[in-house]
Image (cartoon, rainbow, N blue to C red; front, side):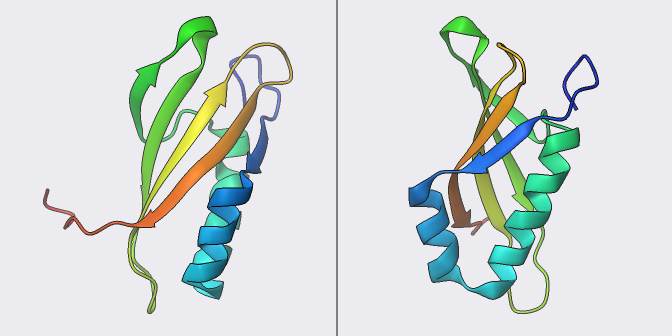
Length: 100
């Protein structure tokens, strides 16, 4: 939810969606779950950059599960105007270990 408690609209770009499709069903499920989580908690992970107008670039990690590798997900959060919105722009296998 946004700072005002409103759910955030979360979408995935066409490029990121194509990559998710390439990576398979487990990744698709994980990213859909992340979309739901981001709608309530849009500042999840590590803030990478704040752009003009308050646009925020974040990166987060989805842990490995089953045969799915851990994922690094980059998304853009736009808190204003209301309703707040986020767009998942990149989904890639995370080749770093959890210890890094």
